[in-house]
Length: 184
Image 1 (tube, rainbow, N blue to C red):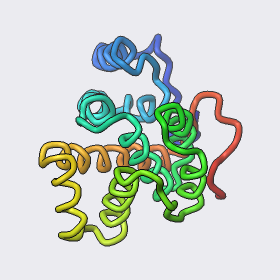
Image 2 (cartoon, rainbow, N blue to C red):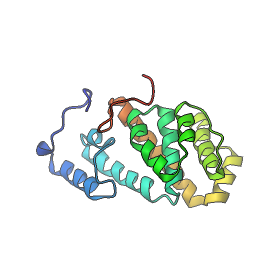
Image 3 (tube, rainbow, N blue to C red):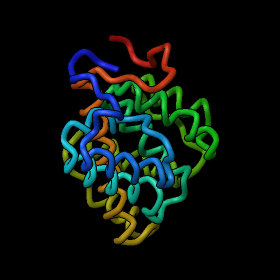
């Protein structure tokens, strides 16, 4: 996996580590692809983060296409190799246009055909670029999705930034990843 973390063997897992892994494997993800084998070296963080991640990925109130678009924007901003590799096919299957994903990967704003896609991109980009969201973009987001979903969107962006940071710091790759979407 990485030379930056101690090697982890399931057979050597502590009861706390086993509990985290069992919850991940029995949940909606059903696999350990992602930051989980990095976080497992801190079982309490792993448990809290994976639960937050399950909420952010599956229960924000956003359609899957928009959640995955926000994840791709995050992966591109952080140049998170594994995060992009994992979520790119999910995003395409959810309806993100392949051409839009490629423009995002290259670090640019697509000419979106869908206003919701443009709004999610603009919201995420403003937050990453300026560390704030303009009143105009905020009003558009709340008007379209409501306060609760906008709060959840901020949580989703923060969670996937944590995932990107984890995977970048520990030089983690996705299972089966043979190519890198971003130059290193």
